Image 1 (cartoon, rainbow, N blue to C red):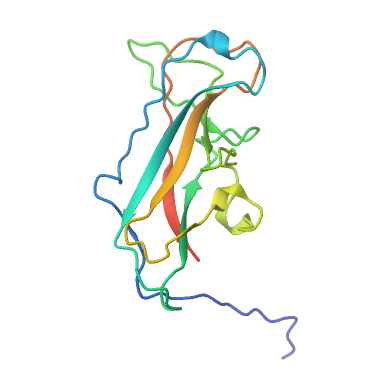
Image 2 (cartoon, one colour):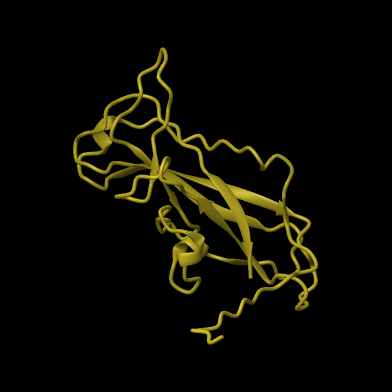
Length: 175
């Protein structure tokens, strides 16, 4: 029987990977209270807030059997990410409090470059995409990965007052 092509699969198994530090599995980042008038233009941002993901138990030897660097892949799905902007949709629940409208949460890398949460991990280019900013482990058993979050207005003068909340899962990625 003739064949039309061939596929080769490659990968790597490492001896040890990192783990989330204690208390890092469920994290809350509290953004500051800001005025709706802060968002006068489309693309306006406010409330830049740093946050970290702390790791532990990373391999301390720089052998080929261990990963040399680590990053976080934020798992944005269609139900939580605005497909026009790549930011997190406000999913605050109604109740006794009002829900802010026309405002999103934008995640940024350690260099304060916006991370496009629409991108699938398989489509990312580690050389070009900020979604995969790697931190070298370099024998450090407890590296800290730094990020930022901020409010983002996709439209001019349309943000209304109220609560904002968004949640995203993440995966540690090694190379």
